[in-house]
Structure formats: structure tokens, C-alpha cells
Image (cartoon, rainbow, N blue to C red; front, side, top):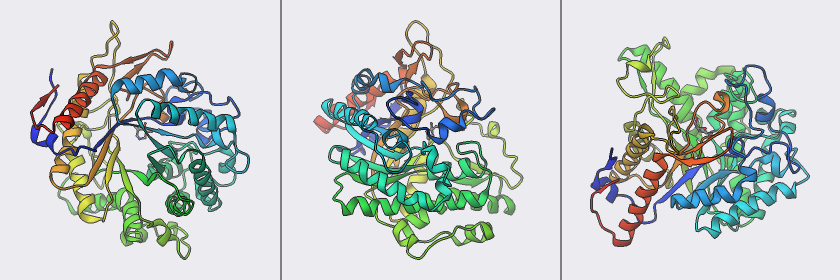
Amino acid sequence: MTFAIPPATLASFPQDFVWGVATSAYQIEGAAAEDGKGPSIWDDFCRVPGAIADASDGRVACDHYHRLEEDLDLIASLGVDAYRFSVSWPRVQPTGAGAWNEQGVGFYDRLVDGLLARGIQPYLTLNHWDLPSALQAQGGWAARSTVQRFVDYACRMDRRLGDRVRAITTHNEPWVVATLGHETGVFAPGLKDRRSAVQAAHHLLLSHGLALQALRAQGCKAQLGLVLNLSPIGPATDRPDDAAAARLEDGRLVRWYMDPLFKGEYPADVLQHLGADAPQVHEGDLRAIATPMDFLGINYYTRGVVSARGDWDVTTSGHALTDMGWEVYPRGLTELLLRLHRDWQVPPLFVKENGAAFKDTLVGGRVHDAERTDYIARHIAAVGEALRQGVPMAGYMVWSLMDNFEWASGYAKRFGIVHVDYATLARTPKDSALWYREFLRQQRARRATASTEPVEV
Ligand code: IFM
């Protein structure tokens, strides 16, 4: 089976386009209570009966903390330009305030140096959801005091690693933290309160903006930005109530974040919908949130289709579904990127996560995951198409380097291009990893010759 990307599309990727793979701390590190690490809200949430589908947790995960060198070699073997990882805040600052844990910082020091030694650019994320439990006890993201804690943490991390990392992302997917963590309660910290969710979203955005200002004020050398999970949202039918429901969903997922970041205002229709649950916004907050970024990261997996009655059946879409039940819809990525470029003054855009869970089987040392390779190839083509149409795309990163702890789904959902045997923790590159490596090799060859020859790998 070959996975072709149209030559015209391939030719649109600039020479300095950044190709990478991504992970996050809680999902791969393990060592959840070692070397001075404090507890996080995900350590706590995993103990709630029924919270995690397979009743698992991140205590061991992929044991990345103890297998750092092996994993660095694995990343290097793929031939990527960049590796996106997150820092576990409670590993470097166990209670989210005050004392710093040198052993924890040392781990990230070795990670960054190990990447650089292998010629890979480190892309650091400060918050990929594992807030220190001690801060949750003081209200977590719903409390304004967490904003300053985060700014302090960001500045300290920059002083330790900022001279060596290419980019610092403040938050990964604030919608998930706010909505799934505080409104539907299916993610940590497991609250079910819309007002808290909306306030948490505001504090995440505010802490992002203030962190950028503080980092720049102390001379941070890394590129600075934020990563949003976005999708194009459309109505299930042409009925007016479906159109209204889709517009509101777009407001809560996309415009609620894009408008304050790039226009310095919350969308009026969503504020009206929220009524008394609208956030407490202080004078100057929106100006801070709109602090210019060096890049915007987008995580894209699927589109959203909304019906007013909540009865759209994804299995009727006619498209393949992933093991998460998510529709495979690469065209939605091009649509989304074009819209971001058209409707907001966006800086260079990165796809910071894109990938798919499928049911994999390891047979004779191979995982023939053709569906995942097809998914990735089609989404890379979708990015190329956006580039061709003038969108300032700067990079693309596969989610994920390896199978890992998929939050409330536990270990059953495998997103990796590298298979992890959770009994032995052995890593085995899947066919998708071999394809990506070959694709990147050809990209590099194309860079070297600046050729536009068709590429079929
Ligand atoms: O695994 C997650 C990741 O942590 C954040 N973005 C979506 C991925 C797949 O669900």
C-alpha cells in the first residue's frame, strides 16, 4: 500500500517547515511520586472510582522518566526536526508555589540537552493539564490566584531552559481543561459547574497573556505561543435550530478562544448565552490576553457536526471512524486553517497534534497500521493544501510519538506511531513510524535539491 501526497501539495512546504512528534508528561513519564515530584490533579482523578475506563493511572505509564536515553534515540531514529513535550509542573515545583525540586528540573535539563545533542529542536509546553494538587486545593484554574502562580512557574522554567528550547507553549488545549475538567467533569479535576468552567477558561487565557509579557520582560529567547484544540463546526441539517446550535458550539470551542486572543473581546453571542455564568473580567485582562504571540498551535483530530437535538449519528457520515469514534475528515483541517487565516490576524500556525487511535496488533515484531498511516498522510496533504492557498503554516507534529495513557480512556486507545507493550514496556515502531521516517527522509532530500518530483512512499 502506498500513501501518496500530491506533488503540488508537497512542493508547497517551505524549506524551514518543522516536522515533529509530540507527547505530554503525565501520559508517558510515570515516576509519579519519585525524586520529589508532588501530586497532580490527574494523580488524584485517577483514584476516583469509574473516572478512568480501565481503572488505570499514570504511575508507570511508558516509564519514559527512566528510559530517557532510549526514548531520545527512538525520537532521533525517526528523523524529525522537533520534539514537543510538556513539563510536569508538580515535578519541578511540587506544590505549585515556592520550593523548586532540582531533581525534577534535572530530568528536563537532560531531556533538552539530549535532544539538542541529537540535532532535534525542543518544543516545551508548560501546562498539559497536570496541575499541582496543592493549587487545586486553593481553587485551581477557577481561582484567580493560580494565574500568578503560573506566571512565576513560567518565568522560572524559562530561566532554567529558555536558552535551549526553540519554543515555549503556555497551555495545551484550554477548552479541554475548562470544559471537560470543570463543566462535564469527565477529566480532572472532575467538576460539573459551568460557571467554574468559564472562569477557568478566562484564567487560563489571562495567565497565558501575562506569562508572555513576563517572559519577554526577562528576555526569553524562545518563540512563545499557545495551543488550541479547534475544529470546524457545522449543522447536521439546514434546519434553523441546527444552524443556531452549531453557531453556539463554534462560539464556545473556537471563537471563545480566538476572539479574546486576537481581537481582545469575548464573543457577544456566547456571553449572552452564558448569562450569569459569564466570567469575572478585571480591567486590563483582555488587553493582556491579546498580547501578540510568535505562533499559534492547533490540535486537529476531526470536525464537529451539531444538531439541536443532539442526535447526529457519526456512523452515518460515510467516513471512516477511528477507535475513539472520531470521524476521519482531513478536509476539515484545511477548512479550519483557511478560516483562522481569514478571520483573525494569526501569526505562523503549527499543527501541534494530529493523529489517530486504531486497534493495533503486534505480530512478529510489526504493527501494520495502514489506517493510521493513511490518516497522517491525508492530514499532511490537508496542511499542504492550506499552505498552497496562502496560510502561513510553520510546522506539523504527529500525536503521538508512542502509545500512552489516553486520559479517561486509559491505555486501551493507542495513538502512538510507536507501539508500547505495557507488560514489558518494549517500544516497537509501527508501520506508520516507518512511513513517517521515509516521508521525512524524502522531504529532506527534496529540501537539499529543492526538487518537486512526485513523492510516493
Ligand atoms: O491524548 C490527547 C492529548 O493529550 C491532547 N490532545 C488530544 C490527544 C488525543 O485525545
